[in-house]
Amino acid sequence: DTGVSQNPRHKITKRGQNVTFRCDPISEHNRLYWYRQTLGQGPEFLTYFQNEAQLEKSRLLSDRFSAERPKGSFSTLEIQRTEQGDSAMYLCASSGRDRDRYEQYFGPGTRLTVT
Amino acid sequence: GIQVEQSPPDLILQEGANSTLRCNFSDSVNNLQWFHQNPWGQLINLFYIPSGTKQNGRLSATTVATERYSLLYISSSQTTDSGVYFCAVGLYNFNKFYFGSGTKLNVKP
Image (tube, rainbow over all chains, first blue to last red):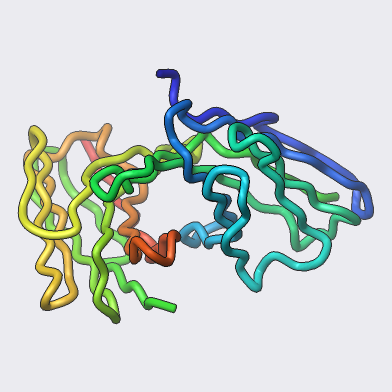
């Protein structure tokens, strides 16, 4: 398995533009998570999918943010009308379905810079 | 949510020295991982250790869930150990991790 992959790795956008990030989890994993990390801080939870169902969303996820996992495989995170405060590293993680497989594996992240 | 405190926040070591990093958490958890974040931002799994003790080469970890803390030991540190170490905790049914602010380790040659 090649691990969790994320695209793009870097994104520079102007304030007010929309951006979309993609995450491909480890193939046999049914759980997928999005986190956001700002400089000097630990990652913060954004949202969680089990298969295609979005089961939990953080209050950090404003109305401008939307995430999908249409077929229970890859996921997309879209930010509409970006703001400078959205500049951060966006991390995706996945984990397995069994209790002893809850270990989360992270992708390399997408670094967003809003100018 | 669960509060996670990591100490020390910063640590400078001479190559070859040993160190202990601590993670305290505010509530009962049944999911705990240690990560090393490299300079490019990639989180590398070190240990999945909701309880007990594990060892992997020069690294070992112990979690005492009943007392709400975990320790990461690094022995004979190397310059490649430099980076930020994160502890993350959670509950299976809540399906997310709470991260600490990390320990930034700098190992000097």
